[in-house]
Image 1 (spheres, one colour):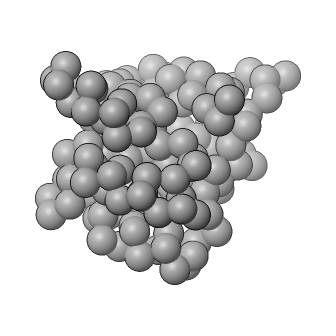
Image 2 (spheres, helix red, strand yellow; image 1 turned 45 degrees about the vertical axis):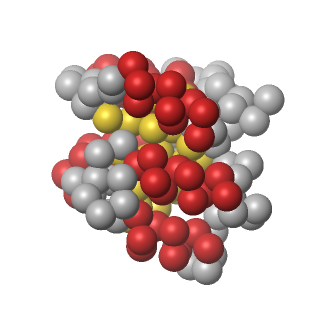
Length: 138
């Protein structure tokens, strides 16, 4: 993508029950910055186990799907923000749609940002480039 842009995040954890969405997401990240490592999980229980037991290197940024079976994105976000070793990791919630109440609730739970899943790959790349170039910890 654009050279000369600083991307703050080199390890991303993607939590999404749709494997195809994960793959598209990872393709877009690689399009932006080849150096970014992506880890994935298809459900909240597995994601929390991986994070708590440090099965994966703790990520710099978490992308979390809002709508998933069993534990939904809000429940997972609440748990992430309650764990001392994880609560400082910025979490970007994403979904195909957000109700105003959802946006308010995820903000209160500690989400750094919410992303409406773009339908076009180019738009996804642009959105991700913008997110990765912003320092969510400041």
